[in-house]
Image (tube, rainbow, N blue to C red; front, side, top):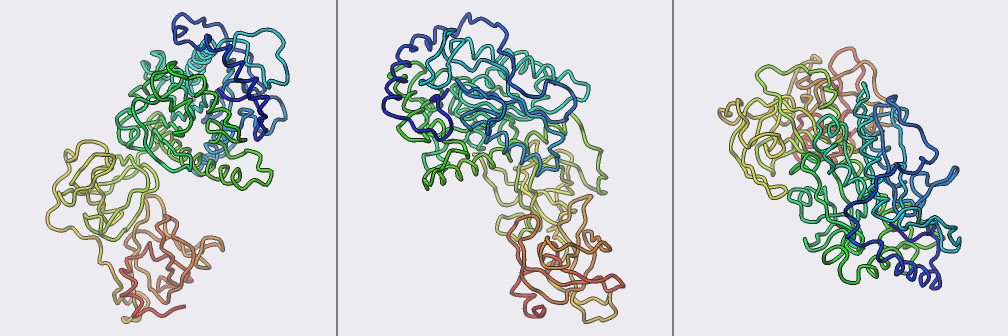
Length: 545
């Protein structure tokens, strides 16, 4: 649902007046009485794109907004206004960052009318794209049925690809209704095939769904692109549909992500759908006299033409899209691991594997949020718990848990709030005593023959990974191919300097030149991966490089 103009195009008063008149003519076609009994005829032929097949492990299905059409050679092949294109690129980049090559991803536009009016006559070109051939509800239902069919196709593939859905405006309503359809939500194989769904400016948004807004799955932005809240009495202009529980989850277990600006009345209309001066609200959202009105300002590709405001809006649109895509892809990867379980890792003796659902979770030297960080998990993963104990309560998303678990692989503690299951993990013993991690701080060792050498141990290395030594205090100048460090290995610490932030992104810029005390050459290691303790302590005995 959008004003029919190309990205960044100007909206003249005359054109706005004509479009307002057209909207008035169409008001009856948007009546909520049309919710029942819509035809389910086949959708329009698909635009140029790959045909459905089972060849790729990842599939992005994109449903664009009303009156959007794409043609060969356009700069935004996933929707002419550019919002969908922004999110398709963001999801692709997030998959790439998770190690999925572009060659393993296919992206398709959903072949549906995306129209607003039952109009099969020639359309005046000066009014923009033709809003026909079907009225809004018939178009939306056709899109829903086609998306259900495509989800079924991919779920039936022997290779079981993972599908990521993107829907903007009417396309968001299509996605929501397809997922709510019993053929998807009520069928485990089909619902399992959907890794994640993202809707932007959804005309069927339902505010206040418990667990979603609290976990940033239902993301509401003000006009400055800062996160804010809205009220339950506001929501979609055309319809209010809850996200099915199989996709919504609760506090981190969801696969549905929704983005809406408070000034976009297509997704944040006051009052019930179809009531009040809803047509004027719709018109204001798609054309407020600027080149980037609220319902369109989610994109990153509006024409700047030297306008710093548009440039800033593009930057903010890109930032938000990247954040949402990263979280959606993390959920999709976790969902794919359920459908395609990875090989069972070796379980450290005396531990219990437990799923950690959250992103950017810290492991600390003690069961308190004031303790130093020994490791940070960027994405959901499996952790290995040795024991658990009651300690400092942690609150997130309105939920509080005072139980912490000790992870011997990471030499630290994690709040059980971020672990799946009940607050106290069944079968995991209570920690006896303090169970501290390996001693923090430097100590004397003689692995190189000198008993006065200062040493530290390697820590915070993920299972199956290793610590490298680098030629410079960064990750850009290569590393030694002869050293692969693992947790608890000893290293001699010779001098320190500053450089790039550690690979886990905790902000640690201290690097040590270290060696093994043997024949292997030394190299630079970030302080984050050594049990060196505090700067105030080790800087007194370790010289600068």
